[in-house]
Image 1: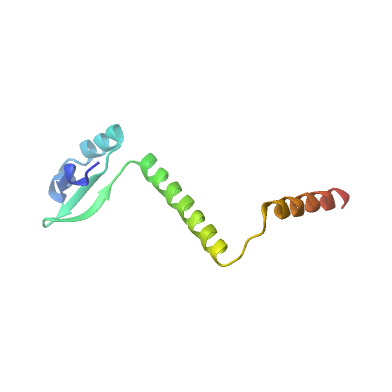
Image 2: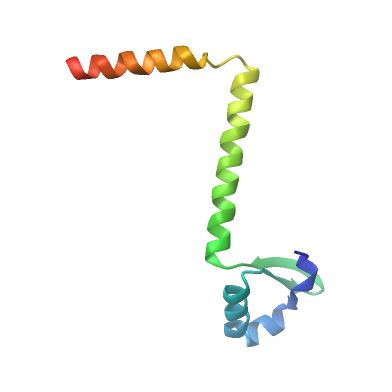
Length: 94
């Protein structure tokens, strides 16, 4: 989706806030608010925002994992499962 398709000046946004929000929620498409001809803010529905935040968190986790692998901070899968099984057995005994 092109953000340029949903651009409104701040003066319009001020006087039509309820309509803009209803359209955003209904269509799940963000709206760019301009001030003095420059894009200043984006309004989007809550569900889209939360999905974006979850996606960013997952991407951050993936990037951290890749950095750990490059730095040698990992263990083979078999060793990781063996260690987990040992910790589980030790917890049962305790």
